[in-house]
Length: 165
Image (cartoon, rainbow, N blue to C red):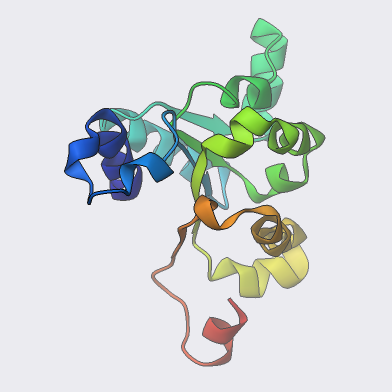
């Protein structure tokens, strides 16, 4: 959350950044955060909103509800307004996400990617939720200015589990 707040502050007031760096950021930056569960996605979206960020949780439930109630495709909405998109790993395989990445205006807005509970890549990613493995494919599609990659975990074991991530 701190990263996107700082980025937004710099885009509003470029003099806060070191000389020559503010121009590297898009005027409407967007951070994509992948969270493993719908409950966590909704909780994170609420926290982001409390901090003054425009966030959008995109998962199978929210997409179905938006379409049913408003005939809205959330990945179309995501191309324009949110500062933070909080999505489940299954969204990395969604055709609508693929279309969003193909939209150059949206692609250029991406200013960082985050993965919460990244230690689950080792357990869930190998069997239960193979969609976690899409992280590597997404990284391969991003440009250098789409950094940083912010990976969070409180329970990753040292050694091989850490190296796998």
